[in-house]
Length: 255
Ligand code: NAP
Image (cartoon, rainbow, N blue to C red):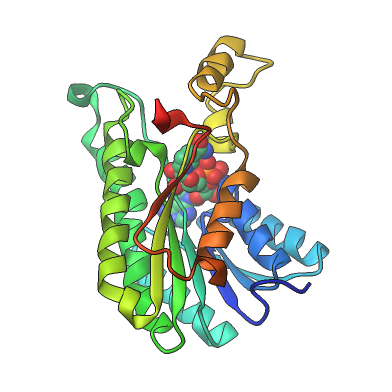
């Protein structure tokens, strides 16, 4: 496995499923040793197995990104286990519910903000000090809903707008010290987060068509299309790119 990340260590959160799993696989294909972090243990072990079956190196770390002690333990464990941390894809996230603001349950608001926004803050809080010696690159998963809003998704919209603000802040604070920080803003991607809500073409063709039509390119995206940008943003090819929120959205936000 020779690639752009030979000898490097990449940490991916939310790596048991969807975009995170695809990211972990992509970093491993490019030669990185990968820390696969998630609350979902079985899925995380499956991601490690997929990487090892393809000849790569990975280890699973159980972690709740909403917990400071859990994230601190994760980052300590990665650096103790692999000796360094070069790249981080802070990707774990949840959708919450889809209801208007007056009906939005406060405990779900807190949970969405806790995972999607505070989780990214905590990851960077513990990753950045470990990257200062050699430099590094961080990509946070935001969303098109960090740039535009989707009615009924107040907590998700607020959390993802926050991720972009946080990304820009970290870039201002650390770019001169060798740590680049960017965000990706995917459109609707065919992952369990979206498809498990019953929008499969076979079972709910109207919902599927509605999401498809929302993208001028005429379809939803695939996880691999998102992580191609994540891996590029972490690579040396993106050495002057920092503080950027990159859309990968089939022109959803161009409308
Ligand atoms: P996914 O398939 O549901 O994967 C998310 C993973 O994160 C799951 O394994 C989930 O575990 C895990 N997770 C949830 N809470 C966590 C926590 N507190 N700590 C650690 N891991 C946690 O979703 P996805 O579609 O790949 O989404 C990945 C990221 O992309 C999210 O930030 C999402 O907001 C963003 N995004 C997705 C889309 C899309 O259309 N799919 C579009 C734009 C942005 P459980 O399954 O046990 O909850």
